[in-house]
Length: 122
Image 1 (cartoon, rainbow, N blue to C red):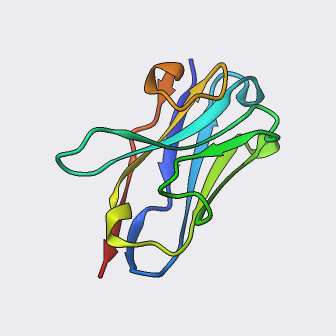
Image 2: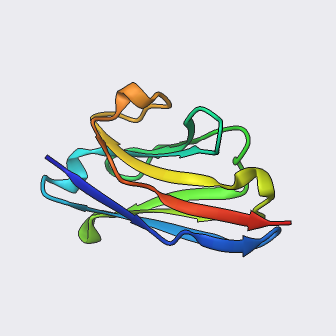
């Protein structure tokens, strides 16, 4: 069982940056690919980014590619999401998730954090 806790969300002005963190406890962090998803009010949860166990392979949603960067530090059991050039459409609750393989689908992940709120003011 992997426990995931996100942090780093908050209020930022359009054009600004935030870095989200997700710390894993229990289990072996390096055994899991990690993903980031987000859910805005009234919308379905959507894929944002994923990173392989060793951090070599990454993939991004088209809407964030070039602005967001996913990375991980297996020694710290932490995955990060650096978000730059934020706009109001990026506002959502952001979730990290752990699974066996990189995936853009929710069902590819077995464990989920509780989410962290990102608000972007225009």
